[in-house]
Length: 352
Image 1 (spheres, rainbow, N blue to C red):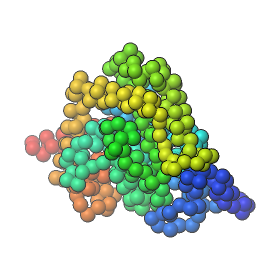
Image 2: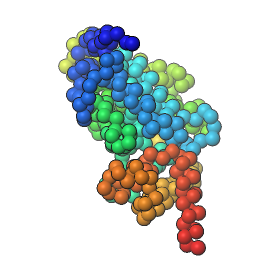
Image 3: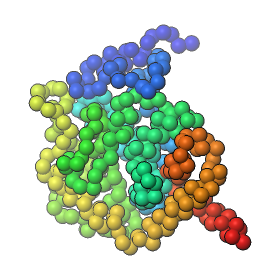
Image 4: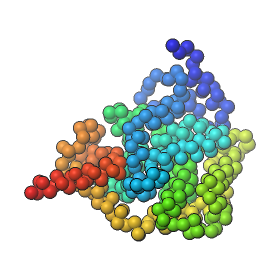
């Protein structure tokens, strides 16, 4: 039997030593529904655990990061990407005296609503569904409603805000359309997401033979380093050094998460290189077209035959199109491919 040591309260008291700009779990804006406090875990630690134990989190292991349904064991998946983001966010948050538990929870939940086939699936659903589709909004829908048999995970306001506002435009990092997260921990997750995908997508692209190390922009490599390890280390250390006012150890008019101009320019150069040479690669068009056709086929079928949806999805919305979007967005790459093939056979049988 656990003695009433109030472990959670002691953890909350330790948070008083964090930066004055950090979010303290006991001062959270709360949850969508009130509930009793955990005797052991803080509110943000509890959120982290709920996300990790969710079905949507498990499905990330079979969802595309960049390369669609990769056969190699070492390609990054949406799950391994999420774990890398979490690790980077925790490192930065800890160094800057911010709430590491909050940064971790946001990071682990930020991509729960991502579609199969990565951003290709997202683009197709955005095109087909009249209400539009954005994976960050779907991630919030997952934690607010779709998980736990329609009850959602009932996460704190701060984690939900970080999940909703983690997305970034294709334009430059910290640019005019960068957007705003309500917490510095959310900002840490946002930049950690970029650091993670820039570096692991370079590795995957080299592994796939799309680019070589020698193709990387020399101006960026001179600043960031010649290896995966060096580039991540340079970016993380630069953010910590240039965001030091966030720690509360020194005064600043407006503490923020930022990079030095040289590192920021080099990072933007490397990111743009990936858009030009990898993400928008024409030679992979056949694979991308196949993924688009699969999502279109699934959307068309289930909007026409909504009774084919699993029973639970019919209870999440009164609108057929929203139910279909929820179902497709939750699919893994392989499940979507198998289901599309199965429905093609069903359609042939119906047409005789």
